[in-house]
Length: 256
Image (cartoon, helix red, strand yellow):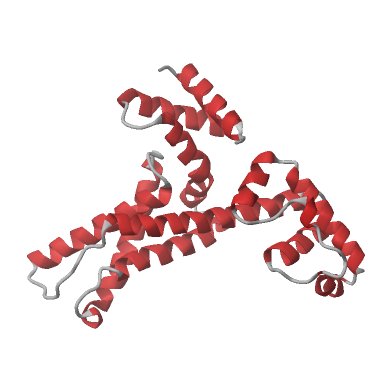
């Protein structure tokens, strides 16, 4: 498979899924598929899917952008959870080891980001990095004669946690994208009303009091926000999967 064939494959698969990538992202994804195709070790469709779902998160983490702070915070909690499941027999005696393991695992993840090839979801790969750090630490402690039985966390258990983290990261990314789409419409009230009613589950009358608007006007803004978001088929599907309702039939009345 040559580069042109990879580009066609990426374009056709993304179109079939209703996914959109910018030209630079298409080029990067095509290069990944080309590299994978040369060794025949992975399903190219899976590479495209993993890239689409995770590339913005990975790129933001690589650049250290402030927008990724929430993702890093979630990742830190995830790593700490796996390390905690290591279950030292005398945790108090090895409290410093726990913190060191978390920091070491995060450092290993940061170092590996530039070479992450999307052969799996990002958090599945991160789980394997953490497991390797834990196992290496166990070997070092055994070599040094430190006491305390330790039990490695099964990788499949870590992967289950990774799936939960994937869902949370995806939801946060979806909420950010919704805010950006609504803000681009030029009326910040669309963002406030949608967030308050749909994401925070506040009542229309309470939102109206907060914005000094009539309940009917707030209902109208919510309808407008949902209509704007429904125009993007991919965003609509992501919202439906996340339980965020954009359907017009669910638009509330002013007394809701």
